[in-house]
Length: 444
Image 1 (cartoon, rainbow, N blue to C red):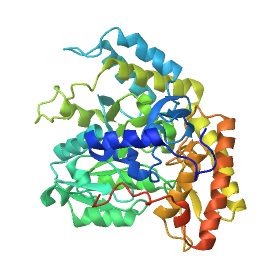
Image 2 (image 1 turned 90 degrees about the vertical axis):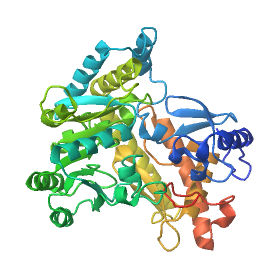
Image 3 (image 1 turned 60 degrees about the horizontal axis):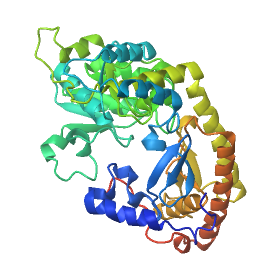
Image 4 (image 1 turned 30 degrees about the horizontal axis):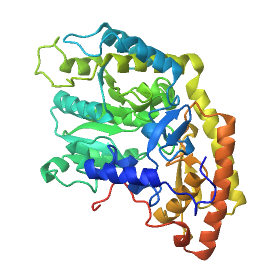
């Protein structure tokens, strides 16, 4: 583990590797949220390997890891059931000129796990399938505009969404103007938007739940609004899929979208995503209809055999081992410990946990109660020094009680420093350099 004395905690090999990364990879990582700007200066570990709930950096430090693989590794690293399924396929070839039998088996398995959907098509990334959903909705309705939930941070790397963020360089304004936003939980505002752009909005796309539970009747109300205004209701279940239930948030809350998208936990780190939904809509991207053809999804690697095998193994593991319930139990234990540690240190109003127990994130507030990147930097620095790698507190099922208890101990020590900084009204002496930065910003 890293030492608790963050003034002595250094990562010389990781620092060198980060410089090498920036020399050959724009941004120094293949996912912006993994960039070293998201971590305290010179304390962005470069990973050697992972096993279960732990990862090791190239400097030899072991960490308890949270938010593994941008929430994708929910069973823990190198999970034996998933690896066994993958290994069975590796010697059998991964990609052919015609569909593998695994394509039908994986589709049938998915639809048995998510029975609210009638057809499914696989991709590799979340952006593949959310963009396919948008294209399909536009084709089905003949309408140009997309309405996204403005309270949810990310839907796609593609122009229809990224053009609405501060990182909109390179995207024509005409494209961005076709995307409008509605607030989560506010049916009246959403209906006003649908009325303002009457017969122009192809779909409403949102995460069915996020850092707060949907208000009573909200999702059913959206379903009714979409039906009344003739638009397609799309649930982005990248995060809620599996973490809320094996059948996603739609299975938990009992509201059926027209289309839904899955990824992340679906492959436990292997690259697989899914677009699922109503047969009459999905068939527009098929061959058994007489209308205009929709180029729905056609990816060279979308049906890679070992990733589909991983997806089936993940779904089986979730259902047979009660993984969703375990994620909730672990998250509840962690949340209780962190909140108690923060309260005891006098920072309970400043280190704030949000979200469902299986999907916890934290906010760091300054002495005025405002979100602060400088206090986040202080907090992350203390966690890293204590052997906890936690851009969030999103759990994996591989964590044990001892991991949770160790994390809470490290958080308690970090909170003691947080209190000192609040008393000084200045965290700078404890940040060790420039503050961490938000992913979406206009300038580097």
